[in-house]
Image (cartoon, rainbow, N blue to C red; front, side, top):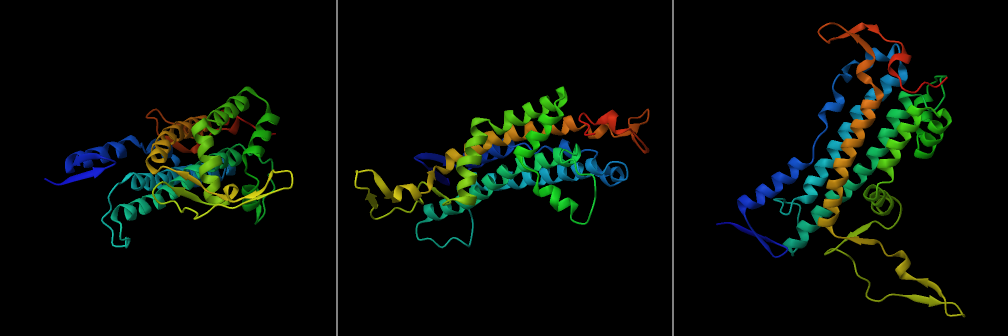
Length: 285
């Protein structure tokens, strides 16, 4: 019988596959958030902001799917791959997992920005209604958490405050904050991440001291963070669930399904669109 050993635990082939399948099943894909959004082009004639927000919702879904795909492959312990050329098979598979994991971190971190874009365009929090060829790119560049937060605070209604609370609950969740500030930030802006079993060790460290004995410079300052692949996979699994719930809360808040009137059979009447005040919870005057 074929056996696998990973971190001193022995698996049969069936046990190995069952554990893998359970992990995949635990990462829900929120298919429901895109229901009814095929009408986004029709909405544009009446509400450009909401039409863009609907398109952004599709982009969020696709980004979650990409992050999920990378995370599933980061969880995988064994790859049948012809690109692995290391002499150490365990290290080769570990390296491939680390590449998927870095991609997953970046994609999960980006999902939050895309959610801000849904709100930024949907509720016109940018407050710029004069359109021009570079309007979209210009508005998109200004879509940041501080700007979204400031705009909602300026609105100041109960709905705006409720929305800001939703955002803060996710943004400042300890796991999400750690992913953003420590993992994604290191990949994008600092010294990359290193992983246990793959880390590059210095032969010697270097320190320089001031006359008073304080440290002038040490190579410890520029060392990248070293993380465990399995622990980080578990972290992203938790974040995936929180992200899906957060995304659903935001899409529910947007009331996309209330833009058009419905008939007695609950079918959209695309020639009968409601006034913005009937579906938008936040109105920018």
